[in-house]
Structure formats: C-alpha cells, structure tokens
Image 1 (cartoon, rainbow over the protein chains, first blue to last red):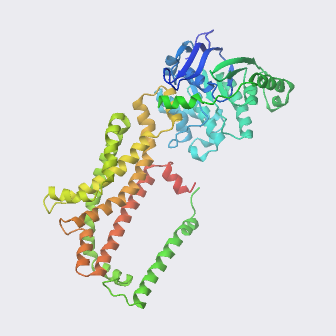
Image 2 (image 1 turned 60 degrees about the vertical axis):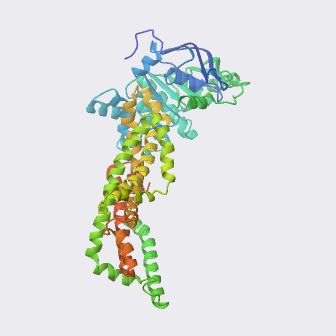
Length: 276
Length: 263
C-alpha cells in the first residue's frame, strides 16, 4: 500500500478551483497552488474563512475536482488514490453512524475493503486500544462525549493503516482542555503509526503545536502566502506549549496572518450549493 | 441506564389519575344534571353496554381491524417502494411531488364514495383502498426524507472510502431511513384504523365498528354506540402499541433504545 521510497505523500501543481465558473456568481476559491508534502510530515493549512483551505483539502481527497492543475497523492492521481483508499479522513463533525456500535463504526472502511469479519474485528479493537477507548467498544456513539466521538473517528480514519490522514478542523467543536488533550493524543497516534497528516485549522497555537510546517493562506483569491517551518521537535508535551520556541513560532505565524482580511464569501458553502 | 420501575410509575400515574377524575366527573354530571341517555350516557352505562355486547363488538372489530391491517401493509409496501424510486431518480420526484401535494390537498375521504361505485356493495376493497392511500402518503413522505436527508459529512466519508451509490444506499441511506419508517408507522397505524372506520360511513356492508356506531345512533342506542366507540379506541391503541413494539425490536441500540433508556 505504501509508495516506493522517495515518493511524495502529496504533490500539488498549479492547482486552481473556480466555483460556478463562467456564471455571474463565479468564485475563485484557489489560484496557483503549489505544495509538496513529504512522508512523515505534519502540515497545517491555516487562514481566515474563505481562504480555500478546506477546498484544498477536499481537492487532495478528490471529493471535488480541480479547475486546473493536478494533485498527486502517494504518487498517484488523486482519484486513483481515493479509489485505493490511500488516505483516511476526519471532519469537524465526528460523523459516526448512530446505528453502529463504536467497533462497527471503526470496522466500516475495512468492511468496504472486503475484509472478513474476524480480521476487521481484530483491527478495530487494535485501533480502539490506540485511541484508548477499548472499554467503549460495544457502546453506541450517542453514549460518548464529543472528544471520545472524535477519537473514534480518528480510529476509523486510520483503521486501514492509510499512509495519509486528512483532517478538516477535527477539534473545532471541542472545548479548549479537551482540544489540547486531543492534540497530544494525535501526535502520539501519528508517531506510532508513522502517518503523514494534512490538517486544516483556524487556531494558531494548534497549528504550531502539531505541525512540522504551517501553510498560511489568504482569501480573494484563495492562495498560499507563506510557509513556515515549525519543527518543535519529535517530543512535544504539555510543557512545549510554555517554551520560548513555541511562543516565537506562534508570533511568526500570527505576523504572517496579519493584514489578511477574511473573505465575505465562504467558498465552502458555495461548493455545497454547486455539488449537491 | 435503565429507567427504574419507580420512574415508570411516576410517568404513568398522572394520565391514569386524570382519566379516573375525568370519568368520575362525567358520571357525576350525568347523575346530577339528569342528562337523558340520548344526550350523553354515563360511563357506567357505556361499560354495561360494552360488556353485554362484547362478542358483537369483537366481530365488528375484526372486520374494521382487518381492513385497516391490509391497507396498512399494502400502503407501507407501496410507500417504501416509491420512496426508493424517489431517492434514486430526481426526475421521478419532480414528476410526483406536485402530484403528491395535489392529492394531499383533496379531501381524500371523498374518494371512498368513488371507490364504492367501482366495486360491488358487499366488497371491502374500497375501504382497504382508502386506508392504503392514506398510509401510502405518510410512509412515502417520511421514508423518502430518511433516504435523502443524509448529512454531507456521511456522504463525503463514504466517497473517501470509494463507496459506490449502491453501497451508500445499503450502508447509509437505508439504515438512516429505518427510524423514519417507524415514525411513519406510529402515525400511519392509528390513522389506518380511523380511515377504516370513517370509510364505513360512505355505504357498503354494515359490519364494521364505524357503521355499527352510526346504526346504533340511528336507533337511539346511545350507550351501545359509545360502547362501539370504546372498541374503536382500543383497536386504534392496539395498532399504535404494535407499531411502537415493532420499533423497539427493530432498532436495537438505535433511536428506540435511546428513548427507552431515557437518554
């Protein structure tokens, strides 16, 4: 499943996306995006509403098609990578199926890959151990807290051991304490599974704490204005948040975002109108 | 998680008390104000009529109940089938939606008179058709919503798993629509009983609960008429409880269980 040595995890070349192209309400969601993400990196996309960061993630996931340019995931065109399930995905909403138990939710991607019952059960339990929810295996989603639901969603996204994890503001709906705990957990999980992550967020401290690189984006039209190397080291703990290096990086990202005005139009909403 | 028996008792006693007080007031009012039986019989008189006519009421209940049941089954089957068609083909929905709305705007019971004209006087088919029609719309609208109104996050997720439309239907849309079907059945089951009674007012055999109520009123047997009304209430209640029981059995861990646990 993993690509040969030297293959980039994600490669984006000359990417643009126009919603409602050729019509009066046309919105340039993204223009001239070039981005290369190497295996093992944790890259955050940050920017104000309407900068196209979610759209860029959806293009990498092949949930929407680019207007121009190309996206390679794991060395393959994005569509082929999606069909091969080369990535796992998590959203702001945990998106658990409420008629399925926690284990059955984690099993879903494996079920769709045609794994047999025993094999997917074993993997699901292994994943639940990874996210520390083993004792909730037979619970139903509505019996779990928001943070626990999001951990189940991460377990599900990683169940098939994809080399890439795409996350769209996964902790956006959680309270600050839960959020910081989840960030630490995510780093541990990604280190244990050596997963590459592309992570969309609004939060500067979140991006700095998690990332090896932070991609700063600006709206109207959506584009990349800055890429900041963070690299606070492999061992990040609660204490990391109180170091000089952490504050320096937070300031650097904040400086990069200064002067960028939010767009009036949220392209992500337009897109829903266009596609559904 | 389980609701304790004390909790259940706390839920049950207010309506029971209300019912008892209501019957007491009714009984007293009839005695004190000396209401004539043709105006309003006392609950005790109705109960007496119910007891002496139990076998007759049971016979009539079987007739109306069977009509309601057959209509409920057929209406649900057609409603579910049509909901799948609607969910699959946009065009079908565009064609049928105005038609469905239009049919809903017609005072639909009038159609019984038309159906009666189409079949022999002794036929139960017009009444069953009527029930089918009423149930059909309730089931169609709810199940179609259940199949369609799946959150975008679920559809994105399934696409990220490279799931086909058929797989999405099987793994997401159908299970999502199951609680909607039971919501529909909880409305449709009592509605089927009501429709079966009212359909009997438009002619045909005088063998069901609805026609017995009318004929007893015509003969000024008011207590007997009320006894048949009581039978009708019990039948409607039985249908509703059957729908609730079916929901509990069919959705373990789902919506039904959540209500049961009071979560």
